[in-house]
Image 1 (cartoon, rainbow over the protein chains, first blue to last red):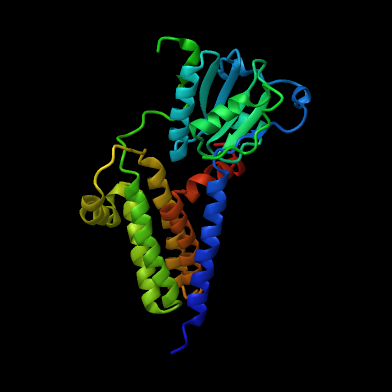
Image 2 (tube, rainbow over the protein chains, first blue to last red):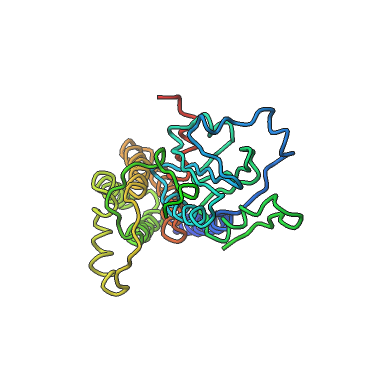
Length: 156
Length: 159
């Protein structure tokens, strides 16, 4: 009989590391970030969104990258659908990542859901990944629209 | 309602979703699985550990084939937990949890096969990996396999 110190220690370390990982993941859900870099030199050309079936809203457009195997994508789609329904100048389009791998690569999307917030010209002004709530969606809409709208990482 | 400007278009989104399931079921099931995996780790490289890991792998096989709602853990949730906590109107798509069961099957199945081939360390290693995923699911509602899906899809060559 060997003392069961090593297995118990491994179990403890695994559980601690998992809790830290989970807490970190949860804090990142839906946090709104401004688009990197200057808005008008976004790698030269602006994406032809119409060719991808996206109707740009007069104010803002939510482009949501989703996957079939993604439960938070459904909740996020519901939230963004409600927000766009109550804002006539905002549209929401959900794109399946399997059908739009070109866009996924072009925008460096690594997980689902990832939501891009586009301005009227189709330039990315902000993005968020992970499940989004209504407050985060409204904060995402406000990015770039006034002097005091720099997102401070809105959370639930 | 009829204002087309503010409408969500889901033509390219996920297709027709099957009937939703209680999202608490798979999470409770993951909690039960996590307990078993913790015991596997404590049993270390013994035969008992291999047997218990095989039981967990068999449960994942059931879940991968029938969906998370078709496992014995889901049955425990429905008969023991559900009467106490009451029903919820909340529903989730059964496909992500089912995919998670398949990911669990791959991890624990590899541990069982390697263990049978004499690689004793594979049993606790597989149990640690599966335990991380199960705890993330049970405690945080995070589906690790689903989270990694797009990354894997991006590295995999186009079909």
